[in-house]
Length: 490
Image (cartoon, rainbow, N blue to C red):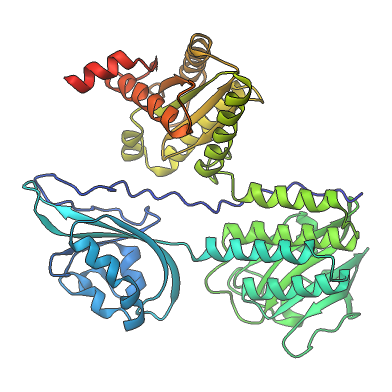
C-alpha cells in the first residue's frame, strides 16, 4: 500500500474582513485611513454621482493609476463596457439603498481579468439619507482556479476509464494550465541520475527517456530539501550560477518530490524560460505537493476504493480548514453542527454550543499590528483545540470569533469547562510584545427540542456572549431567556 505524505490544507474560503455589511449612520462620512495595504480587499467609496471619494492602493492598482489620479473621477467609466455591464444592475440596486453581494468575472483597465466577489453597501449620513455607495471587492481568482484544478485532479485520478499513463499525461497538462508554465515533467531519480519518465511540452521539446545528471537540475534542490520548491525568477533569485540555469536557462520552476511506497521516486515539476509573473503563491506551493502525491499514487497503481475515498477526504479537508488558525472554517463547522443537531433529535443526547470572542481584539490589531493579531488568533485556537476533547467540534466562524460544540455536555458542566479554559488562557497564553492579559468572553446555550436548525441555537449563544461582553468581558455566561426579555423590553 502506498504511504501517502500528509497534505497541508489549502484555505479556499477567504473570509471577508469588511464589516460594514449595513450602511453607516455616523454623523461624519466614513473614511478609510492609512495603511490600506494590510487589507486583502479593494475598497472604493463613490458619491451619489458615482465619483470616487476614496480608494485604497489595491483598488487603484487594478486601474493602473495612483490613488490621487482616481479621486474625483467616475472610475466606473474606466471599466471596459462588458465589465461595467455585468455589475450595473447590482450597482443600481445599491443606489436605491440595497446591500448587494455577488461574484463575477471582470476585466479591469490594466487588461487583467479577475474573478471577484463584490459587495455594494449604501452609504448613509446621520439623517438617513443615502450619500453614495461603498464598494468592497475581493480577488477570488486564485481560490476559484484552485478549486477547479482540485476538482479536475480528482476527476482524472478517480476515473476507471484511463490507464495510469493517460492519467499522468492529463495531470501534467492540468498542471501546465494551472501554473501557466509550458513544460511539465515527471522524473525518475536513481542515485545521481535524473531521467524524464513523462513530459508535456508545446512542441515535443522534452522527450521521455532523456537523462541528465541530477546536479544539473533544480530538482536536486527539491530533493535535497525534501519539500516543494518554487522559483519565480531564477536569475534575480541568485540561481544564475546554478548548473541548471547555465545548461537550460530556465527562469521559472515549481516542483515537489514524488514519493512511491514510502520511498523517493523522483519529482514532478513545471518550468518556463521566462520569469513567473505573478510570483508563485503559498497556495500554489501547497498545490504542487498535491500533484506530487497524486502522481505517487498513480505510479504505485493504487486505484482501489480506499485510495479514492482517501482522496475525497483530502479534497474536503482542503476546503474545510481555516488557513490562519488550522481549525475548521465557518462552512465546515456549521456542517458538523447540523450533524450534531440531527444526532440530538435521534438520540436525545444534549450538547452545548459555545461562542468565543477574543476581548479587545481590534485594539490589539490597532496597537500592535495585524501580524501580532494573527498570532493571538492562532494561539487561542491552539489552546482551545488542546483543551477540548476529540469528540468536541471547534472552528473559527468570524474574524476573532470561534465556536465550540461540547458533545454530551449540558449547561452546568459546560460552564465549568469554559471557566477552566478561560483561566488557562489568562495563565498560560502570552504573545509578545503584548504585556497585558489576553482574555476571551464566552456565551453558552444548550440544545433544546425546539432547535430545528443550528442557527437558532447559535443565536442564543451569541446573545449570551453579548451579555458577557457588555458585563465587562473575560467571563462565561449561559443564555437566560428572562434576561434577554428584560433587555429587549428595556
